[in-house]
Amino acid sequence: MKQVLVTGGAGYIGSHTIVSLVEQGFYPIIVDDLRNSSRVILDGLAELTVDRFLFIPIDICDKEALFRVFDDHTFDAIIHFAAYKSVGESCEVPLQYYQNNLIGLMNVLEACSRYSIPKFVFSSSCTVYGEPDQKQVYETTPKRLPESPYGFTKWMGEQIIEDVHRNSVPFQTICLRYFNPIGAHPSGLIGELPVGIPNNLLPYITQTAAGIRSHLTVFGNDYPTPDGTCIRDYVHVNDVADAHVRALLFTSENPLSVFNIGTGKGTSVLEMIQYFNEVSGMDLPYHIGSRRAGDITEIFANVSYSNATLGWRAKRNVKEALNDAWNWEKRQAKSND
Ligand SMILES: NC(=O)c1ccc[n+]([C@@H]2O[C@H](COP(=O)([O-])OP(=O)(O)OC[C@H]3O[C@@H](n4cnc5c(N)ncnc54)[C@H](O)[C@@H]3O)[C@@H](O)[C@H]2O)c1
Image (cartoon, rainbow, N blue to C red):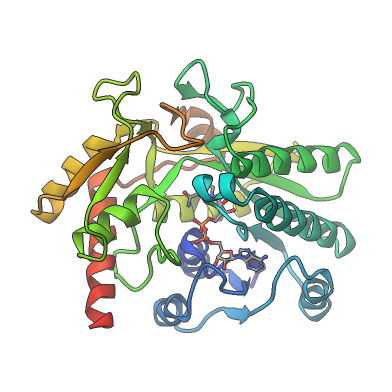
């Protein structure tokens, strides 16, 4: 059985990927210090996978601890999720973002070379496109300087990987540029579990609906879009998870490949609220606030290259994702009662 190291595997996208990996016959070993996750997710994973994974609690910035994992286990591939991910927060504490996201990546890349790991999958982001001229972006769309320190960590992460590959390293890298992952596993056993106040739209919507937050703030309704709110490409997290399995199965003569992981369709914040009201039967309270630092107006993926070359396509729609996210939030609320 192929063994895969999954950094940040207890996190939101990581945990859903663990389920997909186990379903496809891989044995994942998670390294995560749970700084932005919790035992609840590991319990859900244990139930969903019948314990077919290993969890090692370490900080990947601790290079010695990380290398000990490589001394003790052999890996056919690494999927590297572990990083901080909030655009807004990164503007407030940029050093923490540069330290964690870049040192973590460099440690993992060093391990790839030192321990001759044949495949490396990197969690990149559509933030590397910055504020693009054309709102639909291709993998070939020139990268622009991002709007936030978080975006820079992904932009520089890709640059570091490119530079490492210039030296003809003996491993294959696949960068997956996620657009906006949302939703949860339909079982309701795992989902997004942000520590503290959520920075992403979806957990904020579901926490407001569950009464944890009094209302949702929409950050600006004066953007040049049809309803004035920002437009993003929301993609079900289980589809994102499946893209990682495709990446592990993907072979290419090209040592470095990049794929957009989105649906190809943009949805505005107000449309998301309306869809959520439809699937939940609620009337979500929201206020219009001012614009938030680091947010761009509109972006969505062109996915023809990932469809044709990676053999991956998003199968679930936004309403299914909203329904699954709401199901997860309700289960959480019940278990906290
Ligand atoms: N969720 C999104 O909207 C989105 C979009 C684009 C890219 N990404 C990227 O995808 C990856 C996963 O995102 P996510 O939404 O699952 O985030 P997440 O915060 O839910 O998961 C990240 C996991 O990594 C762990 N972690 C962070 N730093 C660590 C360290 N130094 N050592 C050990 N563990 C550490 C956290 O505890 C957490 O469990 C990140 O690299 C993120 O930047 C996310």
